[in-house]
Image (cartoon, rainbow, N blue to C red; front, side, top):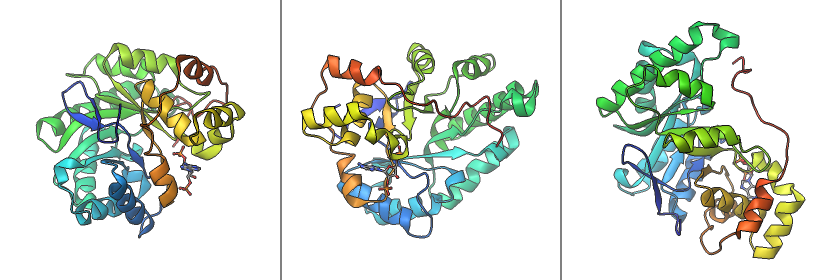
Length: 282
Ligand code: A2P
């Protein structure tokens, strides 16, 4: 990847700009609209939101007011946990389209897998039914690509039993010290693009001493070191910021290349694990 305008190609042939702009914990009612407007101004063409974030209308407003052609901006949103199942997922997509004020969504994700802890043996069927709705939404042209978030290999294997096609994307928690290697391997083997949510560990990963050392070595910031590593690994990062200088910094990733040895050093870092999708109860 050599510029913010470059794309990964999803398994259905759709292009997805290589860095997405994250909006989780970005407030509705202006803050998110300003942040997204700033991101579009400095060249991001990929915005990641979710019904759960309650800021879809801010995202839609920023996209519409940007003056950039709709087809040049890639918008992702997600189906929340309360909306699982065939009918609910279809209705949730309609609601997101209305709130965004858009006629189609580029990528629609199941936000979290239904797990056995909450749903026992029904979990598999619930995920399969939600996915059936997603496949239809694709066929209807309401979404250009369908994917999942927080799915581990065993959730994807279950989906595979009834899916007409596999998710194009799995958006997972990934950052130095918590890469979720098994999920990366599974996705690579199934041509599923991995996106990283909270790639900076909500800011905490920036303080890892080894990242600071590399930042000095390359003359870049800690955030740029982490995001660049993800791009070189074929992982699409979704950094969030509401601060204009950081929004620009997180997109300025294309004038340096990390050596293989430095990549290996980043990959060897250890940090506390993140959320386990089999244990969530929301
Ligand atoms: P803010 O939004 O106030 O600018 P993640 O994407 O891993 O969830 O991290 C987001 C958090 O990291 C936010 O608190 C954001 O702060 C902060 N952040 C984002 N980019 C940078 C950066 N380049 N340098 C320092 N902090 C950053």
